[in-house]
Length: 200
Image (cartoon, rainbow, N blue to C red; front, side, top):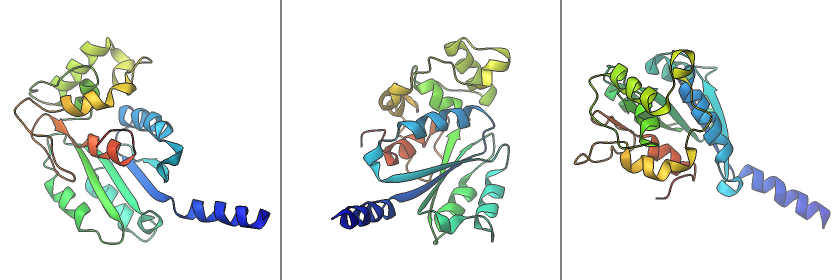
């Protein structure tokens, strides 16, 4: 009987979906995703690996991932979290969708990741550029100086449901999976749904 239980446990481990989450954000995205990873329910059936690629361009991340030592085939799914940063990411998203060995999804925040963070506090507004969005985020959090690129200790992680409804302008629609939405917007809700942290 002990062997049967042990065998069943091994089989349960094998059925977990392996998910790699990559971000090129040096601090804020990394901090956010580390906390989110810890919040994923144990019964979600996911084995999650977080890989920061500080400052790398999305295309470089994808090229490295598909290289001989990139590890793409080690994972069932790969989610690459990047900012728009004033650069059209449609080609990057097309390349992600075109990979067949694993499911690869690009998550793009326009103009920057702070759009998703702002939505945890209130609805986003139109921003001239990422500097404008980052300024709004600092106003909401009261952060400045070195702390401005991190998360405050009291960041409202429990507001992901509201954030998913507030991360785009009223009248616009939420961007679809593996797309680049209008400014401001983000496809972060798709990742949170996949991790079981956001209602369908």
